[in-house]
Image (tube, rainbow, N blue to C red):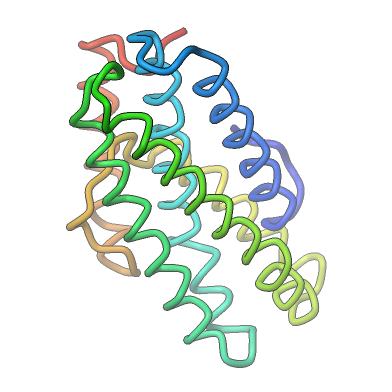
Length: 186
């Protein structure tokens, strides 16, 4: 989306956008086939956001925050669970009885992850870095989101350097597929 500012401001804005996308899903009646479109938008944004965090936020946490390896590993584990849930949701029609159950479970998992990041990880990173030190990963996150995949790939690597090498190619293939199918278009 590209909002300017440091990595914490960028990712917090992304979290609010995902909240808004979940609200769009929930605004439609349970079982309504139209829920597929906003659910796809949730998936697109969550995958892009997660890939950007994996490429630039978590390496910064590992480098600058005391105990950062454990924190980053926990966040990556959260991402893996969310990505698996996204993959399951992607395979369901919006009127499938499991769709709403999975969407609700996904929202809960994402909300818990966001709460952990915003109440803990972001404060630790802000205390460990200068304001300027937070700007560079913010710029990189914005760039990464533009090139990131738009579909869940649970078996894809989630740590550098492999994710930085494979992510853009996978993203290109996903965006081409989205273009052909019209997925993610308003």
